[in-house]
Amino acid sequence: MTRLRALLWDVDGTLAETERDGHRVAFNQAFEAFGLPWRWDEARYGELLHVTGGRERLLSDMASRRDAPIVARDRETLARAIHAKKNDFYAALVGAGSIPLREGVAELMRECLERDVRMAIATTTSRANLDALLRFHLGAGWQDAFAAVVCGEDVRNKKPDPEVYLAALARLGEDPLRTLAVEDSPGGVAAAHAADIPVLVTQSAYFGHATIEGAVAIGPGLHERRGWRPATAPDGAGAAARLRVGLDDIEAWCATMDLVSQYA
Image (cartoon, rainbow, N blue to C red; front, side):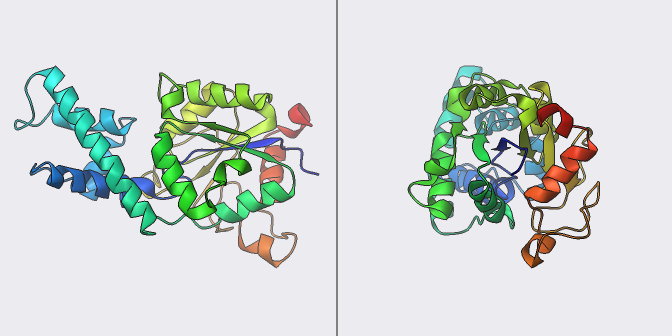
């Protein structure tokens, strides 16, 4: 039986490449729908990701645009309207199958369910966006797989503030050192660390070269055993385990970080 009690999933960039292939595309569609000439290419959106939250990201971009409303209140009103329209377009993209789960995600979720490792969602994206993504990939009853789901509407402060992780821990009723967060970004890692939660980092399209310290392990994705630091064990339990990262690998990494003795 695994010593790990719960796995806490981030969403954007971790479960799927939602930022590059979803939110960015949907924002551009919303700009067009509002008759605005603004467009975010991949590079510009990558810069804006240093601001957490879609509406906040939009406000940051508008602050530097001469063709945006001058009055802050008017910018806020426009940002809320664009963001709402963006969410509609995002849901349509998900429903069309344009945003797949990252490889290895569904398999690790299945392994958690089989081995009684509880799962939670800890994200500051909206509940509507999360529901659209997981309803498409896991079905209408997707919430049954998770012991806790914390979204942007449930907290006042977004990552890197630890509030979302503290809320998830409270709902799980778990000690943080008995859990592990799966993240992709420096801000998400900082949020988990501030809640005393160990972190596994699966590098995403936008944060593949980000400097991240203090992770239990960091690598290219759950589907790939090569390229991880520390390296995965060479002898997985069966062919499937050797092709991807599984709970046995996570246990081994936690052991190297001297976490096992703390939550055994």
